[in-house]
Amino acid sequence: MRFHWSRPVEQAKSFRVSRDAAGRWHVAFAVIPQPIPGPGTGEIVGVDRGVTVSAALSTGDLLVVPLLSAAEKKRLVRLRRTLARAKRGSKRRGKTKTAIAKLKAREGDRRKDWVEKTSTDLVRRFDVIAVEDLKISNMTRSARGTLEVPGTNVRQKAGLNQGILANGWGQLVTRTEHKAPGRVQMVDPRYTSQTCNACGHIARESRESQALFRCVACEHRDHAARTPSSTS
Image (tube, rainbow, N blue to C red; front, side, top):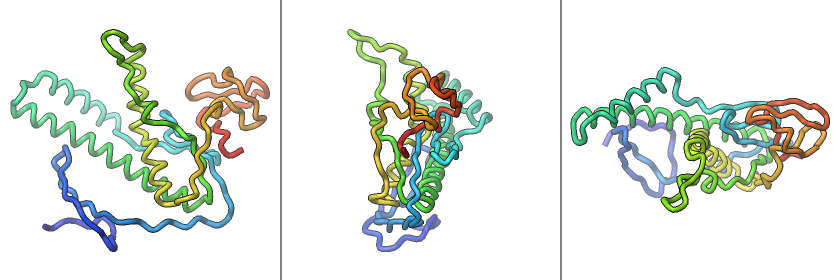
């Protein structure tokens, strides 16, 4: 079988051949990667994961996953409408499903590439990476409820769940831990979004919106994604 080497592989224990929903074939080798050494400067960074900003660093850097473009999103909407009208079992339905899968695969590839590059950059620049210890599986649980006890704000919750997964919260931390074992510090997430980086005052009222933070004590203003207290 001929294939393209995307990266050098050494001492592979096994391999797996698979085909994804977009019809692409992949060969995955099981290899234990070597840790990436830190800079040795003692630098610490706090990483706040969000939906509007994928990863906000305590250094002030705001990093965003490059997802589908506006044109690609419009095409995805059109394809989903076509799929809804297509007859089950028809060739048209099959082609439409493949086209949707290719767009979603493109989005997944961009997210994976961003995660790999961002995690490598973090472990090379900082000796300690602090992130909130978020229970993502619980946070992305469906709010539909049951027939007896129906859920509330289901559509809003579904949108939030999709945003969390699209920004690769779990993937970023997992790959960072793989590359820098023992150097990722998990921090209690309580009150981190309500704590002012300038004066340390904690208040729910300071979080004016998902994107804006304005301290009610000292009037310090900032993007809400830059307010983690994990580095304090």
